[in-house]
Amino acid sequence: MTEDNFRLVSVSPAHAIGEWRGHALVDWQLRPSPESARDLAQLMEQLTSLRPGRSCLLVRVGPQAMLPEDAVRGVLVSVGRRVRGSLNCIGVTVEGSGFSAAAVRGVITGLALAVGQSFAMRSHATLVEMNAWVRPRLLAARADFGTDSEVLAAFSELLAAVRSAPAT
Picture (cartoon, rainbow, N blue to C red):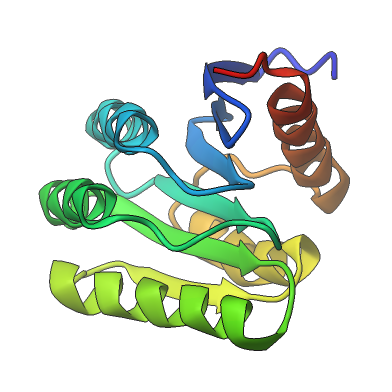
């Protein structure tokens, strides 16, 4: 990807976190680690302080991703509470089907309830579906949000980073 608006922040064989056009993007392919959750928390706090109400979090959870441990959930709830007045929205794409995907959606709902969020949050089956839900919220806030193909390219960049990350 030659997009100047993309910056890789953190990567491992389980995840990649990036910043794209002032938004946080996450691709979790395996179980999220506490370190990756802390990296995400730091990025979200930076972006929401620079662009209150105009930054979002976009997440893709791969079909092999496992449920987060309590420590990860704690970090995510904590940062959610800290940015709830300045984050525009969270869009999550849960890939896969069956019990695992349903369990992930359940955890997402539980995290949202624990945060007591004041931002919109929704799970989707595809990235395109997520984009269609996120885009009007960001445009209403006069935030920069690219085309579907640009968002898909950013997530392709994240997945490529995950796949090429050295095993730890």
